Amino acid sequence: MKNIIIASTSTLHEGRYLEYLLPVLQSHFKNCSTILFIPYARPGGISHDEYTQKAASVFQTINISVKGIHEFEDPETALKNAEGIFTGGGNTFLLVTQLYRNNIMQILSETVKNGIPYLGTSAGSNICGLSMQTTNDMPIVYPPSFQTLGLIPFNLNPHYLDPNLQSKHMGETRETRIKEFHAFNTIPVLGLREGSWIEVKGEKITLKGNLSARLFLQNQQPTELNPESDLSNLK
Amino acid sequence: MKNIIIASTSTLHEGRYLEYLLPVLQSHFKNCSTILFIPYARPGGISHDEYTQKAASVFQTINISVKGIHEFEDPETALKNAEGIFTGGGNTFLLVTQLYRNNIMQILSETVKNGIPYLGTSAGSNICGLSMQTTNDMPIVYPPSFQTLGLIPFNLNPHYLDPNLQSKHMGETRETRIKEFHAFNTIPVLGLREGSWIEVKGEKITLKGNLSARLFLQNQQPTELNPESDLSNLK
Image (cartoon, rainbow over all chains, first blue to last red):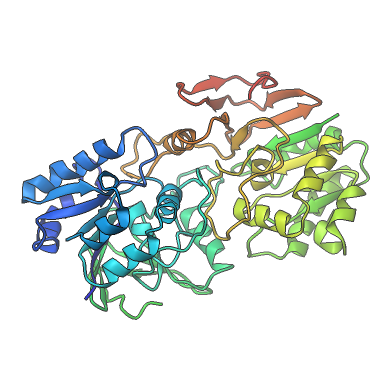
């Protein structure tokens, strides 16, 4: 039975890393003594070790240890033995490239579909959809494919931002960009605001957090979905 | 001798399409009776015909006619016979995909390097750099490569946006994204604000417009370049 938390962001404004999610994570990973962290999305600034340590220092407060996938000789074996998995944020192009380069996109998908609890934040959430094509990130590396884990039957736009009506900027709004996606793709897109997350329990998919999310369907006006909305039939 | 205008945006806030550039374009295309418009970046909303008509209605005010490349049976021949070329904005992933699919990325580059006057705005400017990897656009289609025209020896970030210090949004700023690019790439990136453009005359590259531009070099603090800065040695 799938058991997944897909969060728009790891960190809220003026909050600490994963702080707002911690009560949820305590229950989500309750049967795990150790979780496997995938730091691949991080493009620089801090090393994979440092990024893993950042996650570890939070999970230690709920008595869970964290090991980075880069610490294992064979990432596939690391995934197969994982009690729980957390993929952190950063750049989605980089994350997807690394998952393909290490030949673990498929095994990661299968492992999570088989019921190992998964947490994704930001880029780690983007990859839960059918493709990474509604990411906000810059194409800093060229991935072999835009296809991702397909843990849910739609795409996400994490860190969803409403248009700033005061702005004089002429670049495309997030809504315009998602409409552009729908000129070529039929996949629904859920704009997930910071503070929202999706809970997947088996086939039940639910919008969580205090905020509404913005749903984009091809050739339709976007709509707002309230917290606790059932997303199970969205495809 | 290269003769190129690379503009951050086609349209300024509360301005009309190409309005702020029109005096520059009059001189830039002074030897052209007709220019070839490349509407490929436009992902929807209006057709290639309508987009071409939008460009044509502006150029008609300076007595230049406009023909869309999609109106020609063979886009390569259309390029070879062009007196001037304008590539409009939209989605860079789509534009690059279409240029490759029509097998004209290289011939477009050669044509402009041979001196046919070129205008790019937004996505049409992005492709003037070495790669499209510093675009702001969503990856709505999967291009066969991120390599672009290489008309200038660096990359651009059109519609460059300064961080909003009032924002509570935790998504990456433009500056952070460009730093991420530099974790894997050495190519300089020029953040070109709306209202700025680059003029290329032979090997001379100059920043134009009233605004400064933000220069990002790998492993260095970004700097501000004043209007009329000479960018010829930037690589």
